[in-house]
Length: 173
Image (tube, rainbow, N blue to C red; front, side):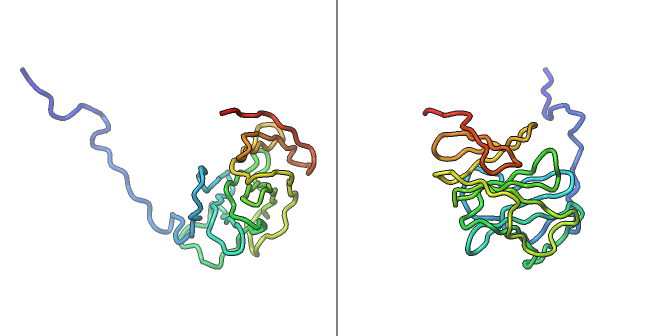
């Protein structure tokens, strides 16, 4: 009776190569805020990461071509008065990103084509009217931005208008 010690697999001798430092993003202060979010979002042009910031929330938007060590003074998107909890790029326009924060607001930002050269503090649209912090954002295939927060509600906003929104679901636990 023969016993097979090593499982037969055609991938058994395949090994990964570590990425070189000049092809990574290095020295980024990722937020220490505990929340159910991945703290990043990416699209074909940019990658965005929520970072630690004093005096409110901020996130960093980097062009995919900018790799290596990121300087501590790199410009950020900083318009929220509370920590940023989630960010999401628009699937229709690679330069549009939404951010939800603990300050009970959602802000829509437009990133310049070459990336940020100075801190971005003024949003294109500020969606207010939430009574609790906004923790989950999702952009759909239509022009709707969905957000969820601690009132167990899911709201839908038209991304181009500040006041057009509706409650889509009320979640009971």
